[in-house]
Length: 349
Image 1 (cartoon, one colour):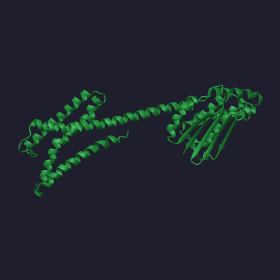
Image 2 (image 1 turned 90 degrees about the horizontal axis):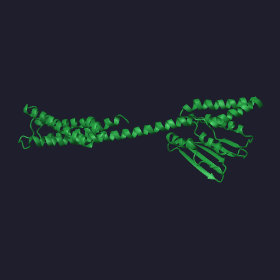
Image 3 (image 1 turned 45 degrees about the vertical axis):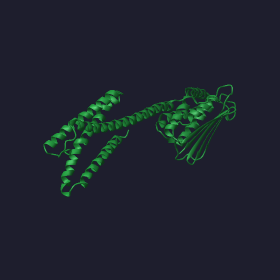
Image 4 (image 1 turned 135 degrees about the horizontal axis):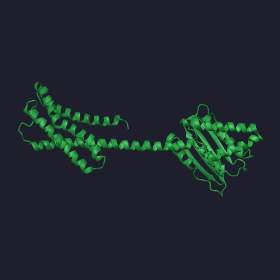
């Protein structure tokens, strides 16, 4: 929470209090002769200070610093009420004693020259004034505590999302890694040059995941290069060159994007496209427009095998990630038509 908010609330309260004091002093100024103005203003201000301002300040900060954290915050409402009343009465009694002493020593003039008010009545009235200030203090402190609690909940939720998203960044489908290494191992004997090329691509992928994904944003060009190498490694597992179709439309120069934003959807497509003999079983495209990036991933799935409506943990977390990093700047659509499942993610910049 911004530290200036508690100060702002307190300053606002005391400024309002000061306005009231100046209004009272203004009344005295208008109803007195010019020769008496200075003395009456000083007398009125001193009386108001001891009669209302000082007991209010004592009650305010006693409730603000003691009553709320010790009793009210712990939901001890009875003790909070009793302690607040006691603090107000004590502040009123002390200030009344100071007021009577100032009058008796001649420092200020007694405004109640007729003596129509008793000691009890004056202390009760001062107690009520102090209680009002105490109530304001409890309201302000309660409001601040509520805002702090809301802020802490938001921070905890954000930290939780960040931890979950860190897991998404760190994860690499173990099946993909094992299969790729096995395929490269078999190629070493048959075609060492090709095996070396694929091993280099796998190294680039691991390097990207270890270093580039530490940043909140990466260049779109690097992200697309990562996806392209991932797709090429996936193709090792099939002789069907038309199994996957990958296309990029538009210029990626200078564009930024959240790393690993599209890969969970692509992994899901490979997971459910079990028949590798089908042409264009997986269609992946990225359209780069001015002010937006549109990602589409469509895959064929076996109707006798369940095509997950959600992309597992990756999809669930990527929604949280989108809400965190692209709030109000994205649209995620999913469509199932016949034997095809499509995900379209639009990012608006």
